[in-house]
Length: 62
Image 1 (cartoon, rainbow, N blue to C red):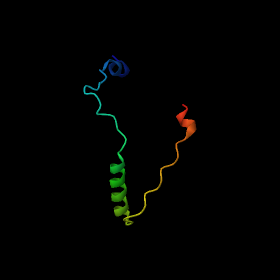
Image 2 (tube, rainbow, N blue to C red):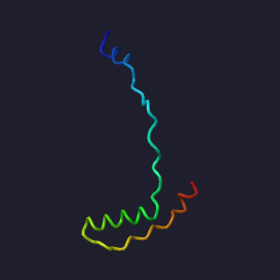
Image 3 (cartoon, rainbow, N blue to C red):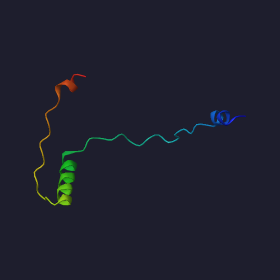
Image 4 (cartoon, rainbow, N blue to C red):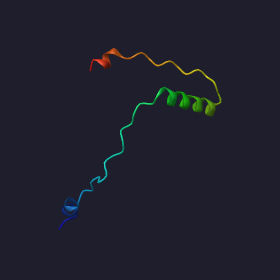
């Protein structure tokens, strides 16, 4: 048996456990807490959080 034939006969591992829960969007409080922690880390505590960009209408139609 050639090496390629042995390789082709090997069992392909399969995921037994289902993947974890899907990522959910952060709540406003989680976003605020994360922003505050980030600002403290980079040395700018109390910096205002940037405004969210307007929704892209071309993406909403898709």
